[in-house]
Length: 147
Image (cartoon, rainbow, N blue to C red; front, top):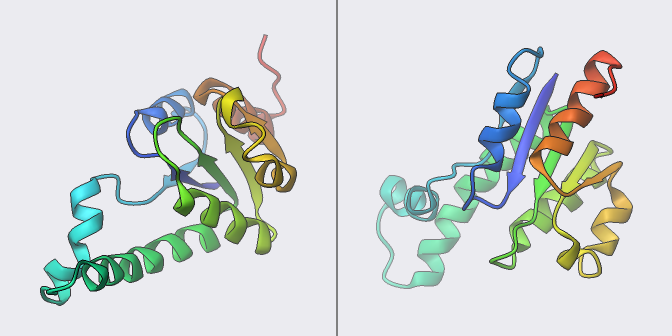
């Protein structure tokens, strides 16, 4: 099974899920989580830009290739919405996954419940913790309910 881990990049939630699922037959993929590398990839590969908007545009386009490919190849998409930043890219990834008919797991705290109600409605699972996501993946793959 292929799982794409999208969303918030400022905490180690991805590592927690990957570690908890280490014994399962799962391949994990996701965006570049080095913020500077992700932001600057376009100008580093394609050349500098005088205006920040074109700097950002080049990086966004390159990252979109990676993201689209990862979501399209994945069986399950996990999208984490953190507490600190508004993550429009995460919402976009969730919408793209839903439009493709992908199985979507959304993870966020209760403080974002109202703001993300439409995203949650498109998801098959809404979790609050990496442990819940890992348990859901384990159940999907093995039919084993945690005790």
